[in-house]
Length: 208
Image 1 (cartoon, rainbow, N blue to C red):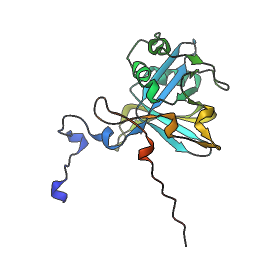
Image 2 (image 1 turned 90 degrees about the horizontal axis):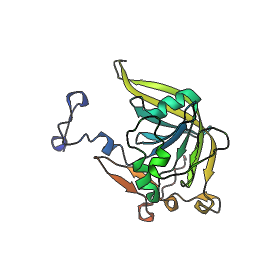
Image 3 (image 1 turned 180 degrees about the horizontal axis):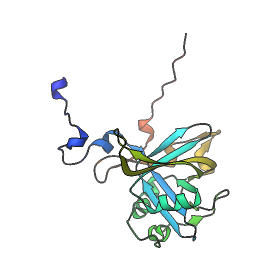
């Protein structure tokens, strides 16, 4: 069986048509991050390296590959919002990832509406059914195993405010599938959508 395994060492290249790393670690939730700089200019951008990292307090994080506008804004203000990317918003989300100058408003570019947050100055996406208001915990420049720094920054934020569309709450339980979240896969354009057919349940085993 081991002879049938494809093996490569990333430092030497993968030798395939497309790097499989992001396809293997996936599908991944999308970090759709809205921010504002000190001059009031808005930014909205999706990040495919994103996830949740802690319960109490709730902490989420995304990685900026290169020094993007979101990173610069968050360094200035210490805050950002995360917005759930859903199937109905997929095209708008995709438009917000276009590489443009810092003075170009991605809300306008993607036809979305910025709406005020309660605890932070960065806006949320009005059309998104779920948003988190976040304050920065840490910004960490990543490094290789040999301690050489790479041009990627992990941004970790504490979720201090949560907005959920009422229709997604049934008897006090959030309905993940009803929100129609989209997830990033591998390849150059692969996304996935959750559906009820993908649900199965496993309860944590009890000791003793």
